[in-house]
Amino acid sequence: MPDTAVSDVWDGVVGQARAVGLLQRASAEPSHAYLFVGPSGSGKRAALRAFAAEVLVRAAPPGADPERVRRLALAEQHPDFVVVDPEGTQFRGGRAPGGESEGVRFQREAWRSPVEGTRKVLAATGFETANPAAIGSLLKTLEEPPDTAVLVVLATTVLPEQVTIASRCVRVDFQPVPPTAIEDRLRAEGVAADVAAQAADLAAGDLSRARLLATDERLGLRAAAWQAVPRQLDGRGATVARLVADLRAMIDDAQASLDDRQAAEVADVNQRIEQYGQRGSGAKELETLHRRERRALRTDELLLGIATLSRVYRDELAVSSRPSELLDGLAALHAAAEALVRNPNEELLLQALLLRLPSLV
Image (tube, rainbow, N blue to C red):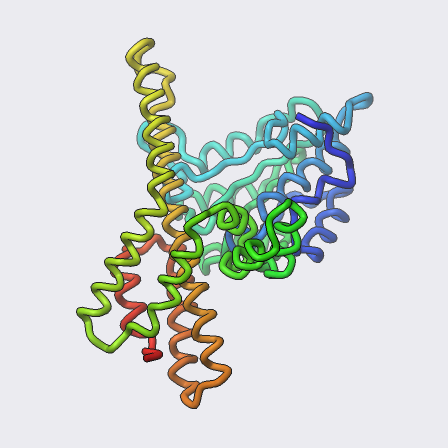
């Protein structure tokens, strides 16, 4: 792994100057708990890694190599930097079938002593999906925080039942990355100007998504299909059903390369099981990871479609004599994007959305 200079630690956090400034100042004397709130792809995870790197450098024992500490933290491989991710669709607390729940692991890790320095950084991601048991266990940890741990909670939003947790943390807000910042970063990474502009426009403020779109040869075809939808709507349920079927088939096509890669990984695991047995094969963990990857890809494709449709209706709004209908359509698109966090039925979500959108025939 190449050396990472001090000036590069925050380089992965794009378009979040206010959050970065706050965390840079806080890393010298961190509070016991932080809450990072913002949409997917806004840079929360990159900011977490950079923040952990700076906290752990200051907590390192005399004579420690600061560049080693930073490199390991940025790769999430430092022994005093622990990230607890949801294994499925929910950050669970209490007992979990077949093993330890995320909430129990987080609470246990919080009270383990640092391995190398005087502090450790412990993070919980996807906390907007936390069940009541996980919320309760985290609240207990925040009320009696260990002296040696800096706790960080990452969430896309703060739900009403999590307000008490938010009140015990320093809140750091992350906004969707501005399209201009995404475009600039993609161009700096060698992406052609026209491709960078299109990917930035369709990424809905998600830099990670923009990087994927910039390498997607079929992006233009999918974007064109979504753009054509408003001019095919005619108020008929049969038309909506046909359009939804076509859009879902297009998402299936986008998922094909992921399915191929996952099938190869499953084949490798099955070969190991055949040679060495089931124990320690990682088959269960791989299945969980694959479900999460498929769900994330389909959610990203739906967000791409919603972003594309929103741009169509905003462009129409500038010249339309019926702005109220278009504003209602934009509101429906915003509501559909927000609903994705609840992992809704894909077909029903699209059908309900297209039935609410005005026709642009």
